[in-house]
Amino acid sequence: MKTYLVLVREPDGRTVIPPADAIQQHQLAVKSWIGELGAKGHWLSGQALTLSGRVIRPTTDGRQVSDGPYRVDGQEIVGGYMLLKASSLEEITALMKTCPVLDTDGFVEIREIME
Image (cartoon, rainbow, N blue to C red; front, side, top):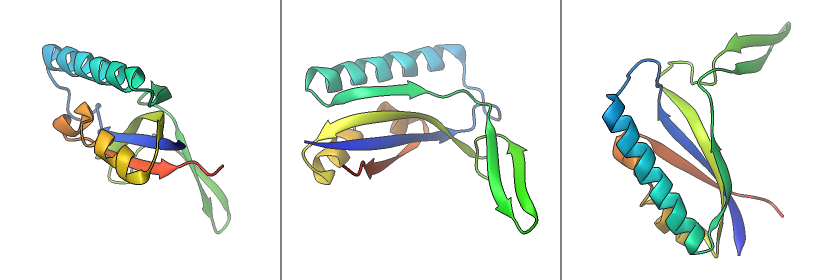
């Protein structure tokens, strides 16, 4: 089995705030989905991330520090990450196609961990 890092990218929760019941339903769907991954031996760990942070970029005269873990256009953020086990990129891709984040305008980035 290989280990994969999955970055969860979502709409910036500071610009579009869904109704509380929609947030709760989404959280329950994600929790259930993660439980299924764990039961099948794929889940290693993962966490949601806060909406605040810093970005540091090199500049011609040093380093630029700015607030926010989001893209320059501010439309999306990395909302969390998961470490998962799968036999291949194809298998992890199939698993991630069922991720509830995809139902709420989010998307995922899958990267194999170098071992």
